Length: 280
Image (cartoon, rainbow, N blue to C red; front, side, top):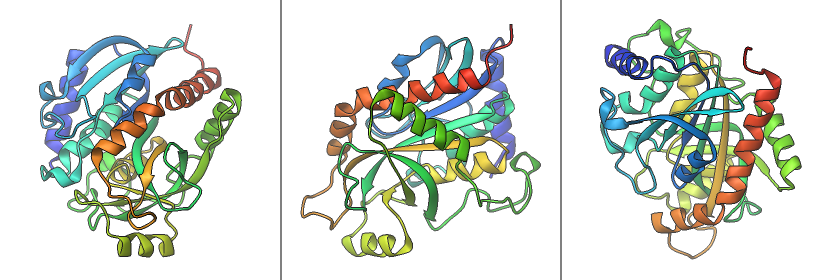
């Protein structure tokens, strides 16, 4: 990975947002972008203005970095993500984590749209990610070691913070929402998985499948950030039903779930603000 490019990206954002003091970061996946409107925006940078990042190439990803505030705490909102399957290398995928780390973020929340493998994960369900399986056939930490990603062999036994998962549960309880827990598997994409692949994923212990999140979680955990993950189940995975899969369905289902997605994230950040209030 080109770590010099990652540093350029982080430096450019710090120059553009000299007064920013973010404690949290939020990556909004497919269909999640509207959730950014729940926060008070302070500044916006298009991804094209950040070296090495480039515009998003997928419908449902706005491609903007929003500096926002919530209960007096700054946060970075990455409104859309770059994907490994776009073929631009790991740098665009890693840049949000590099920026967050350089700017002092301690907690990052990763969101995505996913296909449900487990029978109870029906379209519209929200699933807190307890663990993941990397089925992408690659890893963003492959290559020369750089100290910004911690140890050469980082511990991945607790990628997704227990505390943050408990906060999500409490946020759901306060909002009167039902929320599930499960294991998320990332495939490389861009094709959707075959029914045979989905059956094999289920045997491996996966409850939902998508094409993102795992690389960012690996990098963030290696860099010492506290990580949480949340999936919106937008469809049954291939073979669970006879229905064909489409990205249009993904966007439509996340639109229907917007109010619950927003309530759960706002509830989480309310709890984080209470846990560590801003300095006077």
